[in-house]
Length: 73
Image (cartoon, rainbow, N blue to C red):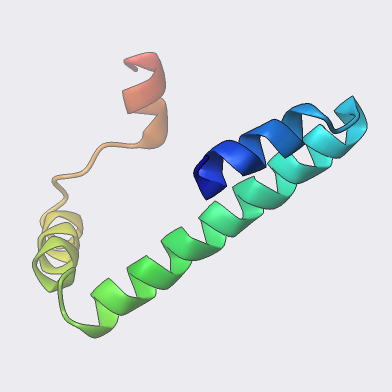
């Protein structure tokens, strides 16, 4: 049995409130991993072109307001 299968088996034995606590912890953990990856990508310059394009679009007024996007107004 793999470690993942063992963990899944153990999770199924937890009471519901602990499963919800675990899910919240896992969501927070994944958010932190995402933040770390974004910081790494930013430090390595992987986002430079995207940032430059966004800044150019803002300077040349080629952006839409959030209301226009959400509500077609």
